[in-house]
Image (cartoon, rainbow, N blue to C red; front, side):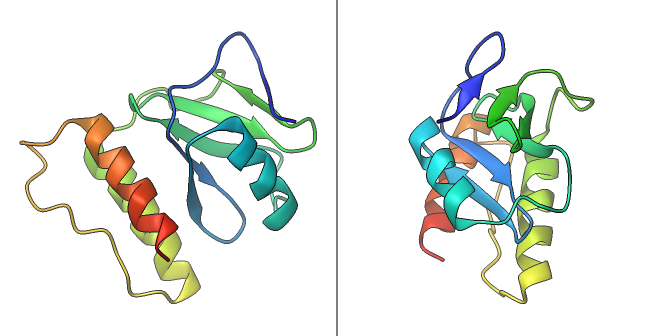
Length: 119
């Protein structure tokens, strides 16, 4: 069961795993990811909530914490992180948002979560 230090992130979130960046609409989904995905390479993993705030996931304790070095993520950096994680798997299905200026950051995170769920 996922626990939170201080407060919860705004769902949906993007969470880094050893394989690629994945989407989660709830803490239960992150718990399932812990059972299905690998979290062995690092001590903490990047989590980005729908407001663009950076978080850390500590799989050894199953805790999500707002204490991280990169607190704010831009639209472009989020897309770059997601597409780079797909390139590492050899998957060609990159997220192509079109115009970033007309979209809110929350909308981009939601679209990436939906895009990731189709992979």
